[in-house]
Amino acid sequence: MIPIVRTYHRLPNIIDEFLRDDNSGGRTKDYSCMCKPAVNVIEHENSFQIDVAAPGFERNQLKATIDNSILTITSVTSKNEPDKKESYLKKEYVTSSFSRSFELPANVEADKIEASHKNGILSINIPKKAKVEIPVQEIEVK
Image (cartoon, rainbow, N blue to C red; front, side, top):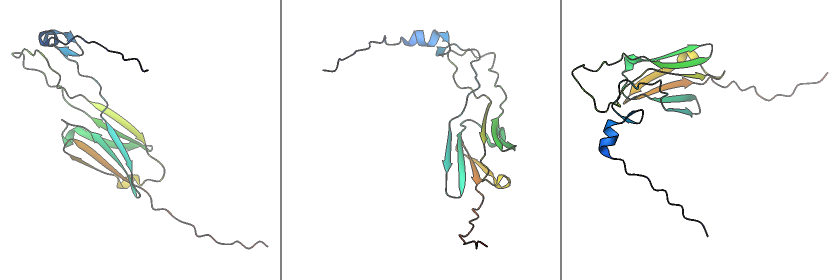
């Protein structure tokens, strides 16, 4: 017989939730953080694709660079200073800078990498080098 375990949690009081002054809710001053966006890396037959979830960022706020086979994706945003007349009870919507780096394999064409931004997703297409197949041949032993 499997024991049944019940876990009771106090239902949150909406007033307590609004007035709590910590990281999980309530009056916040500046809880912006260095967040890492979610990333999908997909390998296709002729390329790799990196999709970065970057909602709230404009195309001109995103940058991709390559240095010594390291692809670095960064974003820089200016802090939106809240209007001093506003008195936030809860403020969770902030965009902060991020940086993600990926080591590129040797079989990519770094000079042909392309990036596009659509609907909050930054897509980076990294083409692979064409495979050079050496035909099997018999070598005469002398």
